Image (tube, rainbow, N blue to C red; front, side, top):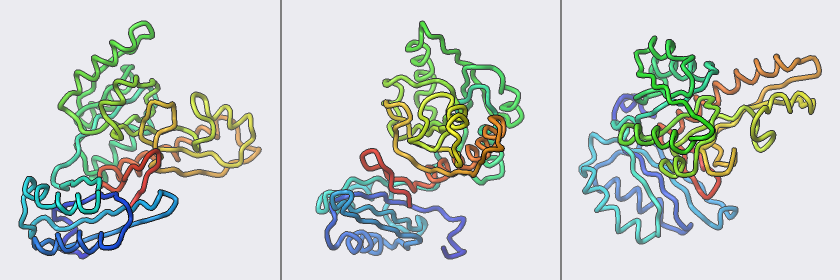
Length: 289
C-alpha cells in the first residue's frame, strides 16, 4: 500500500456473483471513470463454490467524484449486469461495537488494550454483562458498563430487553467469552454481525467444557475459533482459527492457560478482519481477504 494512503479514507466493495469474464474490468473501469485510485484489490473464484466469483477492492475516497447515494445508483447497472450481491463500506464510518462478557476477563482485557492503542479502529459504545465482575475494568477505559442478568425462567424477556437497549446504538457485537446462548430472534437482528470466540478448534468439542473434554481425550493440539453466531450452536461461519501444541505433561490448568492465549489473539484477529471489511460470507463459509 502506498505510504500516502495509509491515513486516508477509503471506499471498499465486497462483491460476489456468478463467475464470468469482464467482472474485474467492469469494476476497475467504474472506479477509474470516477477518478478513484485503487489501493488494494483481491479476488477469488472456485468451482467448489459453484463457480462463484468473490472480490474485494478498496480505493481512495478523497479523489473519487461520486458521493454515497450517487455511487450506489451509478454502480447498480453494473451489479445487475453481472448478477452481483454487493456492499460498499466507507472507512471514515467507524463501526460501533458492543462487547458482551460474563466473568472471564482475558479476551476483554486484550480487546480494550488493542482498541486503546488504536490497533482496532472501532468505537466501543458499551460493555454488557450478565455479571458485575468486570465493571471496574470497563471504568478504567471510561466505557459504559451495563448489567443485564439472564434468568432461566425469563430468558427471552431478558434478552429482548438487551435488544431493545441496543437498538440504534451499535453495528456489531463481540462475544468475549459471554457464557449465554443468544435466542434466534436476537441473532436474526444482527445477521453475520455477532462475533463469538469458542475455546475449541471447531468443529471439535462444540458446546461447553471443551478444555476438559480435550484433556480427557489427550489431544496434542488445542485451539480457538472465532465465528459469526448462527442459530445452530457453534456452527456459524468461521472467521479465524489458531492452535497451540500440548502434550501428556500438560495439566487441565495448563491447557486452559494455553487456550486463553490463543483465544485472545484469534478473537482480536476476527474483529480486525470484520472492521476492515475483509470478510465475505457465502452460505456457511467465509472468504477472508
